[in-house]
Image 1 (cartoon, rainbow, N blue to C red):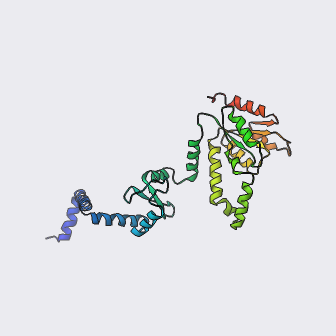
Image 2 (cartoon, helix red, strand yellow; image 1 turned 90 degrees about the horizontal axis):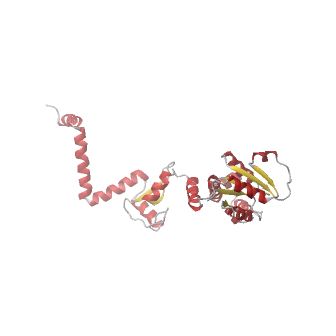
Image 3 (spheres, rainbow, N blue to C red; image 1 turned 30 degrees about the vertical axis):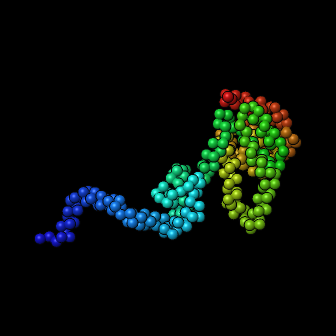
Length: 273
């Protein structure tokens, strides 16, 4: 006579699918009929997956004032509340509702994509978009933006609103925090500003660089040209030092702003609504 253990092994092997089906039914019945077991199982699974005990979860829930860290909607302590985690370290980051958790998953936690989606929703997509590149100290930036908007073209010059000493203040703040240049570039304020500007650059159909410009203007202009966008240079004051590489521009206009506006009107005539 075979031993009972051997008999059971043979039976399981022969009827594996049925055994699994019976086990699943038994498990679900226990969850359904034993609320205490279901509650205990829920916290066991959360701890196994995220390393969070019930007290850890409740502390996080309280810290967020019972609200989703994404959309600020009220959360409930049930399966609709998701524990968000860093996909590299595995460490829990906060609590999100189902929609916000899915949203982060769909964009693969890429902050630049979220910034660009926000800019996309803000822009009037029925019009062509021109990004104005220049210096925070140049008072003519918003006026050029107004002239471009008067053509029926969406102009992006909102970066100028941060004020003419914004870069100097960032440098001063970084010095106070005792940051190196590398550390300053990786700071939240620097990454925020970079993603904000880059989002609009990506969505723009063309760029206009108004001289005089800051140090980063050439990088922005080159980035846009490298993406295949039209790039215009407008020099209204003294030319200063001649730059050979300005030939990358679609057009270089000296002093006559109307010529630039006429060129934009011509180049985007098919897009005009």
